[in-house]
Length: 227
Image 1 (cartoon, one colour):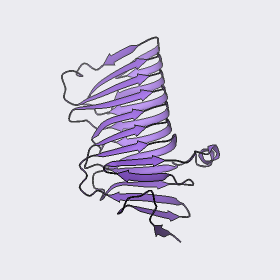
Image 2 (cartoon, rainbow, N blue to C red):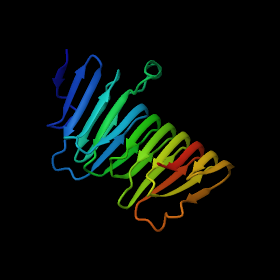
Image 3 (spheres, one colour):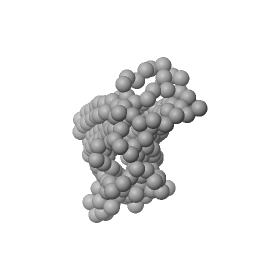
């Protein structure tokens, strides 16, 4: 049996639903013209999606552990009290967090304390920027073609990542700290030391660009176009 209640961390109009399978959060879009999602603590096993037909600004569902969630103006902040390692082991076949973002407004996304096992299908989202601090491990990003430039910044390095971009988007990647097993736009590199800068031939001439900067090295990273 489920129960709906207000949480002190939520602003008026937001809702939280708790039930035996976890908890759900949502907030109406209202007059918001753009969104910002902040993951304030370490995140693992997250599924991130975009839906241009979503009535709410966002919808989030969490299994086992209910985080603090609050909305201030256009910023949705999510903070887990502390991730328990056994929670991850118990849910290897499914995400611990599922978040849908309203695809009718542009978004900025920030992971402040690292992320692992992230599956993000953002092909229906206008993504302005995505920042990952403290490293990324086993992530998959699927991106749309932006009207201008989408900036992706990862500090602390990345291991086992895939970034898929539309066929008609320009791509650039800059890596400090070296790279091993890097695939970029159908080019394969075994090991590269120092700083690396690669870009597709159309990066400077096209208006839709994905600009990726990685500080701390990259291992087993694939950046390629779909199709």
